[in-house]
Length: 174
Image 1 (cartoon, helix red, strand yellow):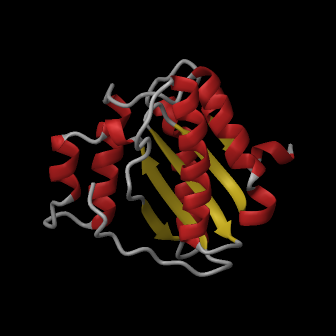
Image 2 (cartoon, helix red, strand yellow):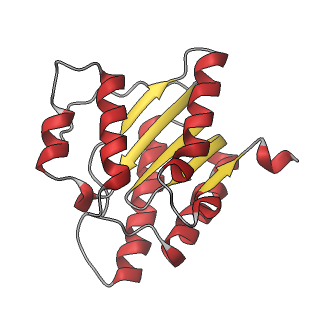
């Protein structure tokens, strides 16, 4: 999907970020992502709904799922305050408060995990789609909506391993 998205970055801001495997991007997703008749939020909801049922680029399972979860949670102290992550088979949702520039956070996550995943899968080339979707959180209500969306994403997609696909800051305080 194109690199035309504008990314808002400011330390201390809460961000909702989604990124996808390169192989999950098909012509339908390309058309949907460039459909300017839809608002950005409606477009992203439709893209997510389609991605949840799409079988393309579904590498984020088993050991790779564990690797991704461990890596994302390990960056918590230095790069962001992580509140929620859902690792779907072909895309990832994050909710965090920035401690570093957003582009640096995404470069750190996508660059390192692409290297390790490609090595694990004995493949080369781009693993993640070049772009990503980000939305600054406006208020507490927006934060709660996004948190619940991320929390329930794998459950709503009826994934057998949904409990392994979600990390939530508040659930881990219990």
